[in-house]
Image (cartoon, rainbow over all chains, first blue to last red; front, side, top):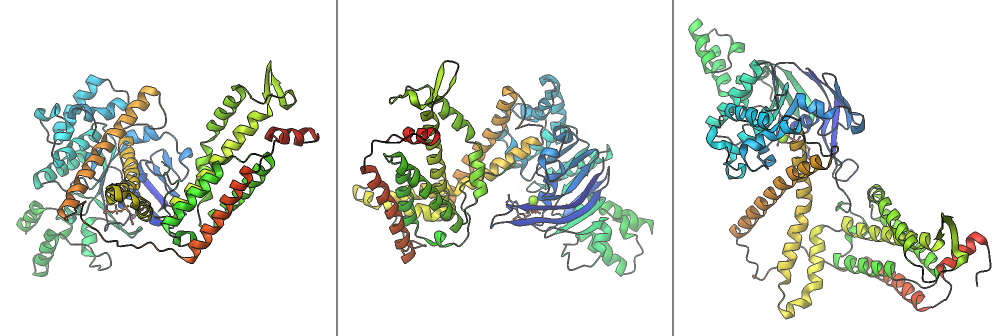
Length: 280
Length: 294
Ligand SMILES: Nc1ncnc2c1ncn2[C@@H]1O[C@H](COP(=O)(O)OP(=O)(O)OP(=O)(O)O)[C@@H](O)[C@H]1O
Ligand SMILES: [Mg+2]
């Protein structure tokens, strides 16, 4: 399931004095079975873009093609939306606001029940999803409202994972989590990707981009300004993208400048760097 | 999901926007009363309504109120129209006149009265919508509450805490758009968990609504708690004497507008006291059958 975004524009509050063009004529393709990071400054249109991927909002103009589904400006013409949402699921910024059931396990199972899975089966698969996000049995029958912010976040993520979508869209899934929670979520994302899922990840953290993403898309004020691989992006010393270069990349670059002959494009994390240095 | 935009403040800078909020509240009340006062004679009702309608349309144009929003809210009114028609068909008609019968459905005689009465009510509701729309989309919620607070000043004498009421009101008004945004956000989140807010039977709809309402309440309560903490942290004391950041000023335009509305109000009052025995139905009957009216 590849995703094609064709000349997509989106305007909030169209035809009012508060009109905002959040996306302007954006076109690109998201590759299958890869982790694509979408980055850009606050207000650059990232959330706006990913909400259209599963037809939660429709583009003002242009269209998005996900496999055999097409999302165009006219909501009435977009067919099989529920089916589409089974294949591509989104986790939004601050998903903890979507919890509502009495217990954590019921809340996680809720999505499956919407697709007609029986209660028992749904709960069972819910338990698996909860374990995947690092929450053990002691959480299953607690009320979701009694949990801490980070725990709520993980429950909400489990609530989407349980649907087992082919494409997973995550809007800043790690914002506000502690390092341990962040690592669990990111490792999970990597693991899901290895299982063959396409991942689209919105983030502000360049370390995550370098470490996890195969592809990176940069938005700036509603325009697409870059698409490519992370290491290449960071090697462009472009001030107009005004990106924060990850320390690891800066360090590797400094090593190269000092005369060490390593391949910067294969360095994604500290282990890679050590391997590269040892190889020499 | 389409946004609910009816009556939302739209920050243009027209002459109507610049009018004093207190004055606009007064004018709105006068207009609403004029719309709902029953003028006795049918011909004057017709003339008055036509005049009011034109006047309101003109006002909407001047103040750049969206006609699309108005039509959108009217679209949902057809149910009301049918409901009113049915009621007027079945309630006994005090001035029953066999000549007023429009047609029969089986043995049921349908009077012109039913159409006239329901049509007139609909017209008045439409005009009422127009008036309130003009008020709320040209006056910011803040100004509106300041205006209301001003009208409540006399209550201070009997120790009613008017500024607390005003503060409560303005916070409530301020949070309406926030809650609407929140609603949209939660609906989107639940939609990606497979909730269908549009299709499905009663059971499905019920679960869908629950999955929206509970998170909405939780976040609203959370927000109010945060807000009250934040207010206290900034030293808000409801009983302290306070000064105003924005002053409401009564301008020449206000005077002119008020006079205009007073003229309309006066005209309606005069027409109301001017009694005529011609029944509205006679008039319709006269149009259709072209018989002498009086
Ligand atoms: N509901 C809305 N109504 C009006 N304007 C909006 C709305 N949501 C977003 N915008 C505007 O659209 C633009 C893009 O917003 P968007 O939420 O997509 O940004 P973002 O890239 O996700 O930012 P962040 O990194 O802060 O999450 C911003 O200028 C924002 O002010
Ligand atoms: Mg965002």
